[in-house]
Length: 466
Image 1: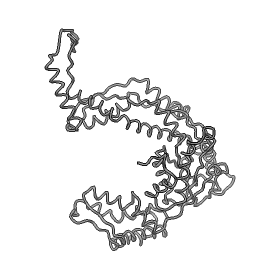
Image 2 (image 1 turned 120 degrees about the vertical axis):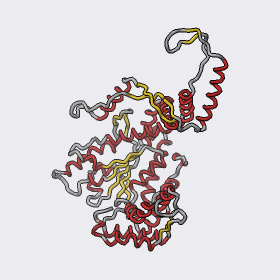
Image 3 (image 1 turned 180 degrees about the vertical axis):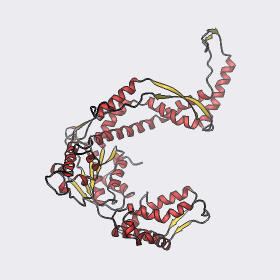
């Protein structure tokens, strides 16, 4: 895997090209934004806090790759990433839902990322500890006593295990230790103790008296106070191994260190993708009431988060000054200039994504690592079947998707999912009952025309389906 810290903008674009067709301007801008993260962290300490990220506003129709660019960028950077719909904040009237929840979600995501990495680091130790617990459940150890033992009935008696029995027990344990390590006993059932928290769920106290953070803190505090009881469960060794490795890894991780690192990662590398930002633009109307007031209220609530503020989370305070915000919208009804000026100013980089052509559809079907044709080939391979697409067939699929987008609603690359599903559903239903594995399934242009002719003809019906 490539080290995200060493990637140049050109290499970042090359990585994005593996999954996303076209949209070169958008890729260049996000690549520069990502590299600027590394540049800021390597700048002089007095300048580091002065350099703020250039937030990006992506403008383009649905299905052209806005979300995919942001999501892939976060994966390349190994950065905490969350996607929120701006329209959800208008759901409960003027005040809107708590916009700070996006930062809390980012902190949660960051903690999960750091925790997963730390667990990976201690995985070997945790696996060894889990194997010992499984071994103890299978063959309990026999220890040589120091002259006396306290049996279960509580009477102290002079008792010493014979040396031979202890040695035999140890030899047996060594044999079974190897068997457990080599996963030879995965289906055997054992009884193990599993820690569980007996704290019931805490409901909201008073009608909205407590805010979300106080609620989470109270739950965490009560959870820490309640004793964790052990529960005996009978599981196969394979199931027990998974649970025990998780438990043992959690013991080896310092959660305070995780929280500290996660907060720092969220602040310096976090990416928040705000989709459908055009839905909270006022649509060109100034003044008045109704939904426009609610939309402007949401914009004003978003402003301090994007400008830079401190947000309380259950892991600590997250400062949003250096979080990268990427906003996106189709802007069919409204224009970017319909957003309040203060919010416009916080998204200085504007990128217009182009609509997809038939040639783009052909490339989307064939080139990316996760191309649709490759996805369907993997589905058929799981059943032991082979499916091949002729070049003419791929052209015909692309032409059909492009034609339907032109005639009905343009939903971009998502239309290809509809077309491919219509084309291959019959095969997916008949596999493996009716089709022989000996002959590979071949998709030709004639077959595509036959199966998709209805989809193209019934334009009125197509308006009501994806």
